[in-house]
Image (tube, rainbow, N blue to C red; front, side, top):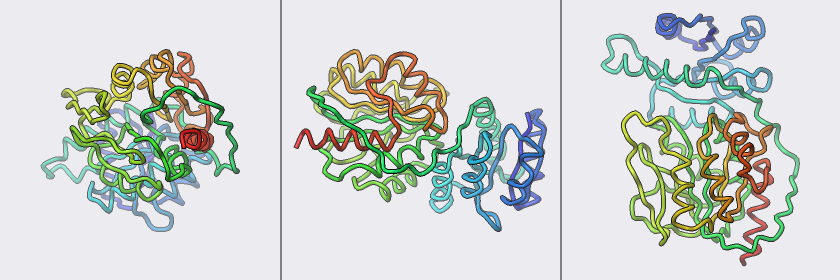
Amino acid sequence: MRVMVIDDSSVVRQLLRTILESEGYEVVEAVDGLQALSSVARLRPDLVTMDVHMPGIDGFETTQRLLQRYSVPVVIVTASANTKEAETAIRALEAGALAVVEKPRGPLHPQFYEHAELLIQTLQRVQSIKVQPPPPQPAKASADPGRWDKPIRLVAIGASAGGPAALKVLLGGLDAACPWPILIVQHISAGFLDSFRDWLGMLSPLPVHIAEAGQALQPGHLYLAPEAHHLAVNGELRVVLTRCAPRETVCPSINHLFDCLAGELKGEVLAILLSGMGRDGAAALAKLKGMGALTLVQQPDSAVVDGMPSAAIALGAACRVQAPEAMALTINGLMRQTS
């Protein structure tokens, strides 16, 4: 498995090379984005680790250009998880990067081995993912929402790798007069949730919150699953949080939210499954559809990673299969039906 390490610091490149080679990876290097773009066709890496701040073109622009030409998983390796760095990393996720991890800082740092292990675990998780280029900026989409006569009490959205790119289009296309609360479970690296909330707030006309236990959901507000907690609601539309078990592989879980909605709201929801690897959300979405819920699944060829949408479609979980811009128009049409 060949990894291209892109970083303008020779010290960091050597450090990452040592970590990766100790785990059996073959390592090739690029000192900046331009060198990476000019050499990736020749070097043919299976994975890319991407620095954020580099001379010339930065990490998120390099990521976007790379994915427009090549199907290679990109992991952002950023210097720290502080707010400024996290905001930049969110932009890279928007461009199609699959994960963001904190950069190991050297063997003498107290968290060196923790950060090195997280880096390796992340690369192992994404190395077999089939990545698709982010779809081009869509022309004006059209979607006939049709009639939907069953009650809708809230909107629930599940997303994983490639989700930020889809959410940008979907949420950015929504009308402000939304009559329902919107719950979002997005798989994202620890330490980046606050910046993800702020980023969503900039692109959506709706207020964005990190959900709190017992909180009453308000129409026209977005609620994110907190770090290390599964998100659910009760029949009174109040937030129910459950702390994730140690070493739980999917946290927060989309299936957990969708299963809860099947039990508590009897399917009176609009449930959406977006880009992501694996199968989280697919089975519970099928259950919701069987209970009469309206279920939208991202069109696989519009997803950066089509694993979750394809799994849902294979289970017959989708009432409609749409690209994110068409989903926004469908939801806006349903809003008008309720007014």
